[in-house]
Length: 181
Image 1 (cartoon, rainbow, N blue to C red):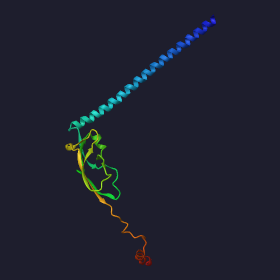
Image 2: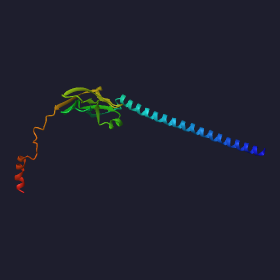
Image 3: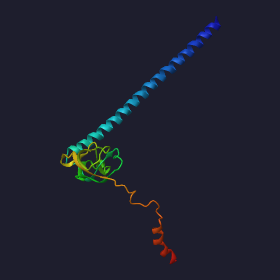
Image 4: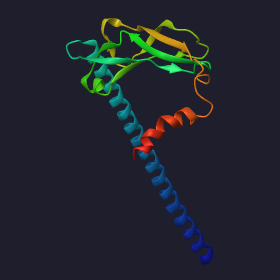
């Protein structure tokens, strides 16, 4: 009987210790989860505060600074074979943007939405929207520029080039220089 009682005591002791360990482990998990949630909320709050500051700077012209930047024409696709772009420009070619000093420091140019070049065989002018970054304002609320794209048909150069670049006439032109050496 004593043996059964000792086994029973060991069982309860071991079982009780296991229960305490599990309770401690559960408490630790709850604490770590709460800490993780608190840190996540703080990071989200910091991000919201940063965005609100930038938005406030943009909303109050007194705090915003201005910067003049180039307008960069974005293109997509390729012209059909036998055509090439001879020139392109946007009107206006530069715009004045406003925003927080830190945000403006990162911006060198403002891009347009992409113009699809596939299928274009002649020069054209097209209105293109600007891709204005978040918390940046374009002066005078300008949102569209005019893109002027000049296209030319490529002339075949095969007829102008001799079949053999070192034709006899070409050798004669270089012989006097070689003889003078």
